[in-house]
Image (cartoon, rainbow, N blue to C red; front, side):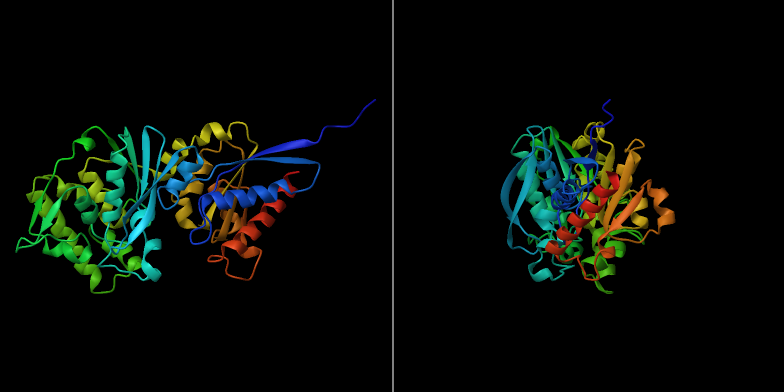
Length: 382
């Protein structure tokens, strides 16, 4: 009698976010998959990779990995220099992101420019997306270098801001307080296109939880810059109200208006609706059907901490994992093992546990460590 059993196959879905500053979501997924496939034991590991995004940097890459086509363009970078950006398009939906058009990672030599940085490049990318006649544009708002309330973006979309002497203003933080008049140009293309803000930022435009106070210092705003930006954004809202946006003040108070240095506010002015970035991209990338035939889901991001529990992408994955074994991988974790059940994960693996070196700025080291972690995860599954 033959008592042998066929080697088992463990089916995994590898669905991480990026490791910011080190690896893209696709690179994280590929490194983990390579490690999992190299694991030895009484069976094999089958890997599906699904790089994810939550509306921050990597949103276009995630859409491309899911089958969208990349369209490359040159746009105006955050401090005026030309940068190579891209959008993703599938024939009906276009994905446009702040990070690859006017994001912090595009600042020359990494030098923060809190008052000079502009969102103009993002507006140019939106215009390019409109030229494709999409039914919907997804506005991924994470990672901005500017706190200009979307003034630069609106300038690229045909708005003209002038000072008291009639001079046209460049859209950036330092120009906000000098706006005297706003001239609006109608864009017929916008009327037939749904605008969707993909962001999990819930901050309003102004106040103690607003864009200048909370995010300004991360973009280089000093003690004098934060109140200047606060006053400038309030002035922007007032001038927009005078130009015909009667609900500008109310929109400034909406959750999400402060995302991306106030670009969220400008998008709301244009009629955009805001959705959870994490859940939206899980839907866009067909996460639910992709996980249907899997036994194990592996997710992760650069840092797992209290913000993760508050709704970042791994938490959204956990909510939708349907009781499957869920494993998290991160550069570091500030959650002790007794808190892992709060995220519904079986185990958290971190790069920090595998090296004494700082892997956060070392892509090669990060990838090597992820391959080893993948191999260890695979050995534990077989």
